[in-house]
Structures are given as structure tokens and as C-alpha cells.
Image 1 (cartoon, helix red, strand yellow):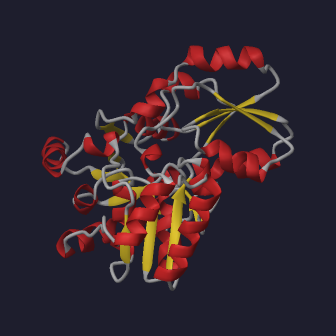
Image 2: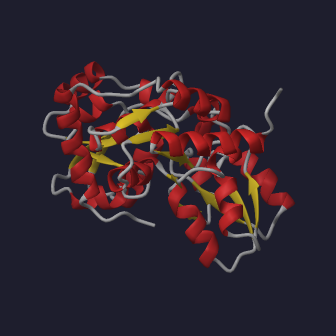
Image 3: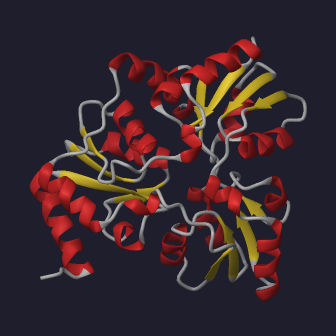
Length: 308
């Protein structure tokens, strides 16, 4: 007999209890997954939550580099990625070999690595950043020569804020955020002229130019809560709408484009979570030498306060 969504959710919670496990879900996950997660958040926030829990098993509803980040900070725990095939196209655009070539091309530059990257790439970077703390990370670096990888849109956004610094960037990008364009935003804005536009810095500069507020996924709900606006147009992956509506039930949220959907983030289903907990398969690890180097870059970032 086919189980209903509610029955599957109940089964997940039962298995989590049996395995003494916690479920972490990224804001871009399916609604029914976020609804039963022990913690929902962005990639760094969830990695930090993993260090705080006493649970020996972490089930991560997200993509591969995020599960790696959990293991980097909590190697003593069993980290499970239910959708083992869920990768990140932007993270795949940069490799250790490409990074080492960039270091040769730009000697003397401090490498700032977006957390949306593999453990191996983090290991050969100087410091990591998130979309939420990126500006403070760059501000903390004394060197005026900065090389940002792999997201060109995030780097261009940073360059606007630090014209005095020589910021170079790699040509990577998030295919999901890069799909939305200015015409998409203007079309939705015409339908909801009183709505404020909130955009993620992974979007192209032409989209950010139309935004009333630019912030990370974790910063969107707090901003909407304190804003006097009653309606918002959201330019990031549509999964974030679940949390926005949950946290702000008296306000309305519209997606800037129906193309703002990440197929990798949607690979995790209740069925895959159930299977992973029943079999204890799809365990994520990182070689110790790489983990220690990557952890150093991540910890430098964590020491810097995050932006809202």
C-alpha cells in the first residue's frame, strides 16, 4: 500500500529516533522535508548545528558539498546524504587543479572560497565565505589583492562594495540563480508593484540592480519580518518560500521566476531519507589530510561574525 506524505513523515521521525539521528534540511529542500527537519537553515548554519547536537548520526537533506562541510567540522559523527547523486553544478566548475593554476596566475592574492565548493577546493584556499558573511570576510583581509572562487556573481557584488581592493574572480556561477533575469523581475513587479524585491547575491548584476534588499537565504526571513512591506518578490531558489511563509504568515511572497528551481536540491525525498535511515548507506567522509586543511579555511570564516 502506498504511504501518504504524512505517513512517510511519521516513518522518518520514527527512524530518526531509532538511529539517534537528527535531520538537517537546507532552505531549498522540498516543503515536506523542511517540515519535519530538526533544523532548517543555510549550509554553514546547518554545519554549525551539527557540531552542537549530541546525536551521533546526521542526515543531511541537501547536496554533496554541504554534507562534506558537516563532516569537516564533525568527523566523529556519521553523516548521511540521502540523495547521494545530489551535487552542485557551481561547485563542480572549480577543481583543485584549476585553483592551483589560478594561484600561479595571480601570485600574492588571498583566495576567498565560497562554501559552495568541494572539500578539496576549500583545502587549497586561504579562507571560506558564505553569501551572508562574505563582505565581512573580505573586510577582515588585510591584503588588497583578493581572488574569489567559484562564483563570479558573488565576486562582482563584492567588488561593488570594495572598489579600493583588486578583486579577481573565477568564471563559475549557480545555474539556478543565473537563470533569472531583469525581465523576469520586472514582469512580476508589474503584477505586484508594492512588493519589495529581495535577491540573493548569486543572481546576475542586472537582477541585483533591481533589488530593494540583497542578502543570503538565512537573511531573507529576518528582513521580511522587520520590513514594513506586506509583499515580497523573491529572487532565489523557490524552496525558501516555505520558511518565509512559515515565519511571516501575515505577508505574501512571490517567486521572481518559475525557473528558480534547483533540480539537485529537489532530489532528496521522504522516500530517500527513509531508505538511507533503514540501510545506513550513503555515508559521506573526507580524507583526513584534506579535511584538516579545509577545516582551517572554514574555521577562519566561522570566527568572523555573519551578516544578516
